[in-house]
Image (cartoon, rainbow, N blue to C red):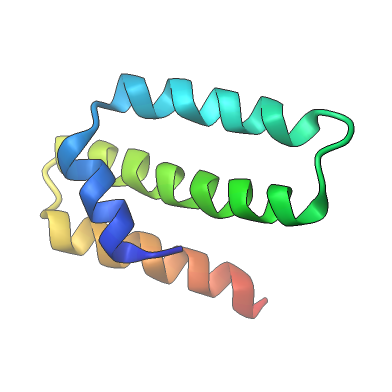
Length: 82
């Protein structure tokens, strides 16, 4: 997860395009013959896209962009610490 990438995706890509990309990456990870290193890269991209989508949703509900980015970061870091 990289907050600058999430911010760029949030600012420059519509949620509909992010959702379509997310579907493609998830399908890619399920293909036979995809190596673990490729799944790791796709997983990092998926995390960043999910973060951008979550920020879009929170901003739409009135949360400031910075707060939404921080909340997603804390959510991810909190799940890693478990």
